[in-house]
Image 1 (cartoon, one colour):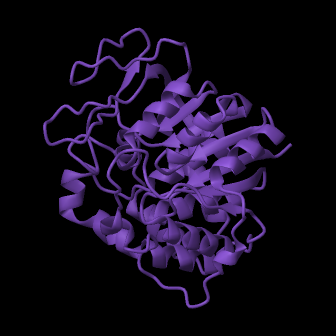
Image 2 (cartoon, helix red, strand yellow):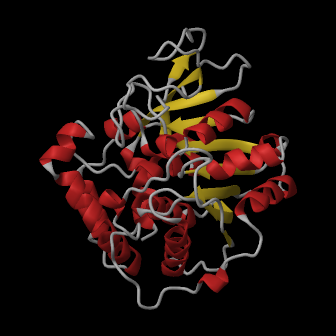
Image 3 (cartoon, helix red, strand yellow):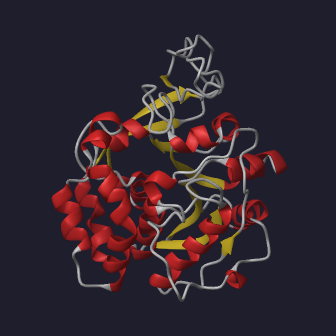
Length: 330
């Protein structure tokens, strides 16, 4: 039986890579893609998602319009890394029409798809968690119908890529992240920022990956050029990733969802984001994941550990070789 996936994205460069990985996996069935604000404005996310599906000849997959802004936080973007349009500022003169979008909104679609495939759907969230938070508020039973939830987001050591202490997806909607980690009862696995930095892809791997003579490889190389240039800069390597290599963060979460044997080590913890920042200038978020039984408080002294026994896994190891699935699909 194929693994059923529902994907929630804010399609930037690494979201595109993760979608393409899912579509290249023969044992995966993508039931739908829901779109959210994040790396770029929602209108761009919708266009970008359709562009990716066009490259993969999979415009049959339903795409849904989701939340265009966070619950409470100030709207953010990652234009400096993904480009103003979210896909490296590489225009497509023959982009698919937005008329291909489904009429049903993303939140209602999530709930419907999960209920129609109860216990079978793995939800992969590589965007701010706004759509998921609204879904569980609208229908508290929604998480019970999911087989599992895989998230790219958060951090464990208060080391940020957007603010001093915050990872982008959680900073972009901290209240949504709090709701999801508090209310979702299905197994949750998180590829956090520090993990992604520790598992950076060697540039030799990336160069070989993008050098293949296929339309998909050409597309990936073009849309990734801006982010790769940024990632190769000495300042980025020193201040952001603390090391060399490419960090397609969303791709790691997707790889684990597609085939959980990619995960070589994980830790079961209780955790939740703190909504009070540790610094006066910091937004109200420090992403904290506390080991089970050790939830004495956040960096700011605020309690954050879940006490309901919900399973929260932080991926601690994932073999780069597993991503050859992506290369084979190009």
